[in-house]
Length: 416
Image (cartoon, rainbow, N blue to C red):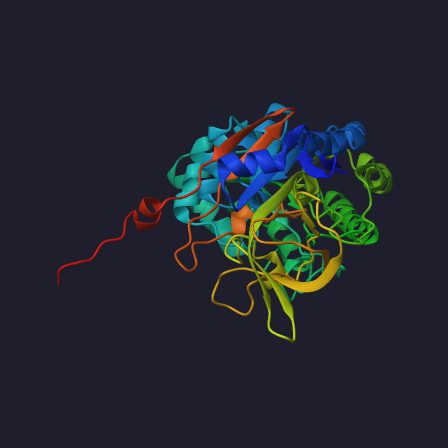
């Protein structure tokens, strides 16, 4: 569910007309609903209340400072994957003891800053990384907590690029090596290895892969306990899917009904890392029609947004619903919706049957709140677009559109 609804033939975000926002912000832009964002977080919080988990929002899905602040105010922790994300989380007021740090390639600078900050724990992806964390912690005379990210080798029904639970992927540690690390943890004098972490992929709409992975890991933890190894934390990751087209994803409550009984029996402190589920349908991308082109073979609706702004259709062949912001025209047409970038891969839709549109009409690309702005770039020397948030009947530009001066910062012509 979301709060982008038509009222009298015009798409609104909560109680604000999107056309009014476009007049002030210009196009293209990203738009977020504070109410949808909050409602989705609270659904997870209520569904998993029996476990009282630490719900760490996966910032990689949306790094806008106001999105993060809105969730932190509701009690969220943060799942980070870089020093930049850690800096943003702290700016938004996140409690360091609710921050977990993933990533297969943590640098010395990142590890040291995270230790200095006092984060809850590192989600460790390899033996060499664990050794590096131990070395840096020893150098800083600190002891830190770590969870080992297990790769359960469980197939997940999702895009190949977002499937992370297979041993053919770069993520996590196999079960045999994980056991060896736990049994030999005395050699890591400055790391308390007291957690297990799993994350099998993203945009998974069925509960079965999660249940399978969690059961496999719980059985593994039980075997470790039988050998006298103490575990305190179980981080079950994220990956809950949303509706883009005709998916039928499980609700937060349906997911909780399946896994809470399994997790309750462990007695462990549970950590969760939802991202897309919270923010995916809380945001849209708004773009303007520049031209209608008909070459006799195809019709093209050419818009001012491009693959540098929203790359998911190009990268994943992802489907996003596209709707006119104002419903005034009659009739429908099959067309490609494409942008101005000099790539044939610059498209938002192929052979899509859409209501007829004309020059200067606004189009809303729906379900763009996750992996939208965060994956945008300056390709073709294009400034990144503004981000706007609506709360009730008010809206604010929460990140300004980049200028040419922004694009040139740090770049200069040198005199050889």
